[in-house]
Image 1 (tube, rainbow, N blue to C red):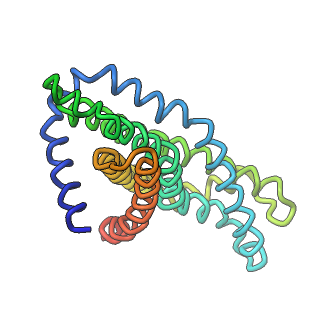
Image 2: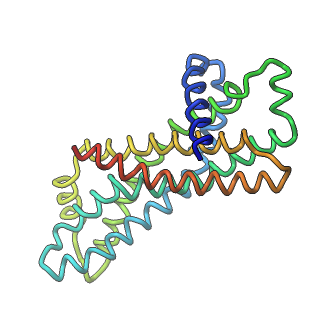
Length: 245
């Protein structure tokens, strides 16, 4: 475990040192951004819409029974902006994109393509890690911003259409505006940026240390996804503690 942590820190440091070379890798970054951002957009919208709907469906009737129906928008908006959207979108991207990154780099490792890059004097960190980490650090906060808005719309539609809640659009978003400000949304976006770094570094690192043929690739993909999700949840707690101060 400590060896993996040390290797992750070293890899992250080498990636940061390579940031001045971002412009040279712009085409690879754009390709990765399309794969991470554009190709995941529909899935993100569907997931966030129903998350907002479920939140309204679960909390709405309970609040109405206690005469607090006007607070449905506040609870749904606040929980989606600060917790549900960044965490669940990060888990989605870890499963969809993180696993693909690990499998791709792991395949290159197993079939000695990374050794071939070194033979051609091409740094694997510059060629493989930097474009993926940069694209992920840009794409995930954008996806989370969209997810927050779509989740609010899903919650508003359910709160309006459900007879047990029956909160109008105007009342829903009035309560939401009174409880959620720009700083709350930025907190969620900042969390997603940190989660993107976690997913990118763990996925690339697991790919680079893959051993043992196709079976080793499968083990690396599993480790990358599981470790990413565990660290996302753990870091979410500490980020929440820091941002609440």
